[in-house]
Length: 272
Image (cartoon, rainbow, N blue to C red; front, side):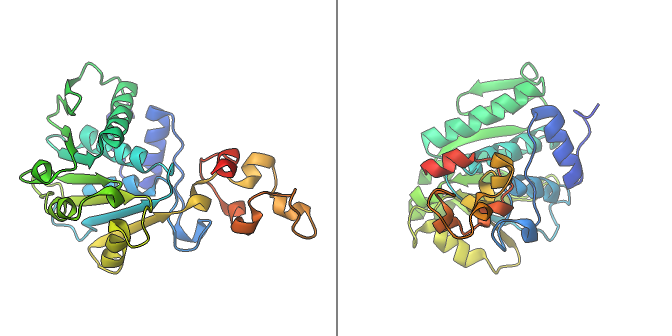
């Protein structure tokens, strides 16, 4: 029964994703994140989905910035939003614009989610460029070229790793989404930081204070597994003073990871 009922609160979305996809979302209020003012992993797609239920004329953020560390689930978060909207908003149209590799990764996540919902035989896999469900919802992958993004009018458009984008393509992308049929238009920009003065940094500065935009920032300390989860306690507190063998990342962490609630394994962070 839970498969067919649209979740309408954060708690219900968490329960739905756990039951259907077997994933425990890491949703945290800003004041509970490892770094003050940041957003916990997985919050963006949940709030995007809940805002969609308010209608096309609702006063909600229309431009979404999602700035996260590499490996911080940006592509998976986009896929979750694609999946939830395709499932619960018939006739919805969504486009994800990215490099070939990133687009394939996102599409692979979406197909896996649909299969877990036992929708494999209920959707039409048109080709490797998109999926159309029998409810009429459409997911399409586009190349990050000016021609590809021109003329397309989806309800929601997702731009992945915009720090790798050409400025002209990015300018045209912002005009892609269009509200109709009760579903509000949104443009979602996601990226890690490749350049301190690159396109993503410019987007964050431009939209951070605008009322019709929202920026989600997740750094490594927000996305990593907590020291308590990895070891049962924070290693920083095992020594009276900082010692090299107590924790190899203390000099840059300064015990921030004690408040982490993410999913990137502690040992993977050490490799980074």
